[in-house]
Image (cartoon, rainbow, N blue to C red; front, top):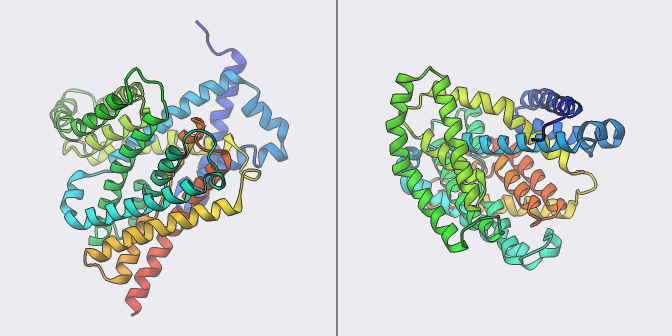
Length: 412
């Protein structure tokens, strides 16, 4: 049995230490400027990666991140686990009863906020595939990916912005969160189907994969949720707290992630759906949820976001025309789609615009989608950089633009 050599272990520990330290420092700086921690963590990765450290200290960068394939492979495994856990806590944020309580407004805002960006994200890359960075393979698949990447809202970022603005418990805050939740579930379902088309290794046919995916989704949101409601009270009563809930939730998260990876649609989908089913249970206390969040958000999530900057050089792959095109399409699709949906639901013009700005926040979701597409050879590095920049810009501007729209309404 192969194992990491002495120098491999040292290299891996130095990688993890440097990534966590830089992530913490820049997350704190980002939060001082009222920005989400994820912005600082991605910047930390760009500084540690070939973009900055690779230029100012190439020998040190090579020693730390490129000289040891075994340590890099181990790090890659840890980062894969971080992505799975990140999607698990994104699922925990989804509260299905909240979606139902907002009724037609949430459905209208969510569906129009999904369909319009999807159409815009699909049409332009379909007719201009070379400009948008089709790496290889199907033009249709590439366009479907871009449509999906433009249409998903980053629920954790939206929740954080609304809390910072004291809007989370308002009618507008609830409808934005509900809309983002529906967006996430439908968007990930579409992306799971796209992954099936991308020829992920699976023992099943494409039709069987899609059919089982849909059945698994329905099961997890109905019977699966009911089973968890039965198991959680026993767990809380019989097992040590919070260790019992923590270890069992992680175990089932990895088990269902393994199931969807076996299906050929990626481990993240199973983790996300398990998070949705678990987070909606009445027997998962807010304190337990907070412990899970703190554990993942401060240890595993930073490792993933820093790793983004280690993969490619953001300077050499920065295409200003492509970046601007992706940003314009992302802004136009979300603001027009969600804003019109809010207008149709009876919101005043400036309130509807604020809803559009709120739904425009992207973040981890688009970056994870982009990374999977990059690793599967569907997109090139320039488009990946454009998607990361778009995620950062939308996350940073969503809150200020919402404040502007609401101030404008108050002044009129």
